[in-house]
Length: 249
Length: 244
Image (cartoon, rainbow over all chains, first blue to last red; front, top):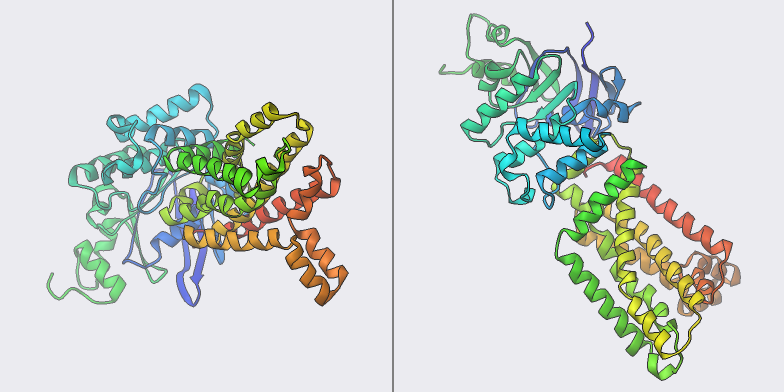
């Protein structure tokens, strides 16, 4: 079965540092993949290559069959991407920002209005549509980034730490949104919040120093520590990324 | 093309989204007036034309254009929005041209703001308006060339101040290489051929003839080549360095 998103032997080095060291993954439609790993493990770098922002040193990524290196524009049309920290143009309002994104994504006239209105509604941006983005709270800024990512109803959604720094209500809202979007789409969510895996992900991949060290459903991951039938995800995380079991679990 | 206009439109909105743009325009108009009336000795010459204005404009552009262009890429890199921009379904070329176009239009607006000078000389006398139109076009194109240099400088760094300094330095080379000061020195040391080659690269040597009302194919080719070259260099930097 071929996935909507396929990473094929992705590698990236910065100087002498190997950031991503041969990541191969396939994410089929309907799957929400949790992309876990310690800080600096290469999560963001992998996502930047998958979305065509960084050019891989080796390997490639395919989105709906389009190779991001050879056909970047066709591939980018199919992706919604929330970069880490949800950057946006601060002087714009969410309304004008989303209108710009809609236009660049090929929507015109009424279609653009409908796409923008839909994204605003699904992310709950109504109260702030006419304020400049730089004056918004962190939660709203994140929602602006999410709105931009889902605006064109993409087949592949790549979200880099979508809930980082949000309060529990906002987290709940974002997770609900991800669950709602899941059918028919391939979604990758990077996080270091392990509860997220149980909350939204149908599968989790843990990477460490640029390599995949664990891959499976949350329940499969729980069996990874030898001698333990049902370990906590945190224990598993520590075990596969440091080789140590938690002393006190 | 639609992507280019969308990006240019957004970028132009960003220029006018802050009060700095208006301060900028006002300062430019005042400075160009000072250049014309005081430095250029407008009244002392007793001729109703805009020669003093156009003669000093390239020197004013030496700081004005890099200031307009410095934020184009450096700002995107600093705020991280470059990642957003470059993962939209657009090509690097579209982004580079769209941004440059926005800055160029902004400079165009600043030139339009100097039209009262033109009106003034028409009230004082009867200048050759054809020459003035061509001179306006020439300085506008000159600004386009210098802005392409500034856009390239901006693509090198995430620090706008560094981008500004690099842009001024490189533009300075292209302006001064046409002055007698530099050319005479080179002529003495390296001979006529080298001096002529350097002179032909200078923006000043390509703006003389339009200022006298002559359109020369060589000058047009020079400007087009310079703009394409520096925008191409910008694309390369964005492609190679991304957000670094």
